[in-house]
Image (tube, rainbow, N blue to C red; front, side, top):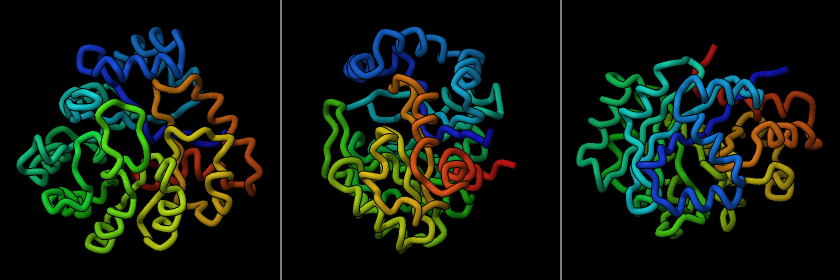
Length: 275
């Protein structure tokens, strides 16, 4: 079997997460989520889950959006992922909480050994082309790390959709032509076409599939194969019923040989500079 990388997972300790996030996750994934989520709170438990679900590596995202989802600090995620090379830590920066985003990201890379950046504009209530974030983009571009940006709708209370339009990333891609920008959720809902167009026209913009039912991917993106090298699997784990089922559904899509291997792992491995 080929390499499987989940580019979008959350640690979300119960005492650091807003209660409505947990309520929604339960409504989607059912009571089994409680057991799975508790097990995931230790790196050893997370690795057992990855093995059971057939996943080789998982990106683990910090979360700095107290108004909407909660706070899982960069330090928490870095310490958690230090237990295994299979757990890949991504920092999170909220420009309303960090007055020096560039310095903070440099610290996360150099001191905490984090390997990507996650931004949640609709949760933090900021535009991704906010000049305050430009120092962080400069650091990310120089370091060659990917920036994962939430685009599209969200069910979480307090999120603001106006910040989730992927078109804001067009300006960022122009101003930082070598920055690897990954559109989390691929513009889910309103902006599938916009996300696809941005990925077509910008060399370093990628689509990421977390939160999208895999069986509908070719409905949302009928020309998905045109971006075979720029589509990345993600789950939003633990808020999905079954990672293994999602992977199997992607494999069953009527795509050319080799395309699913790229989507499920090879494209992410290239971005993450995995061997």
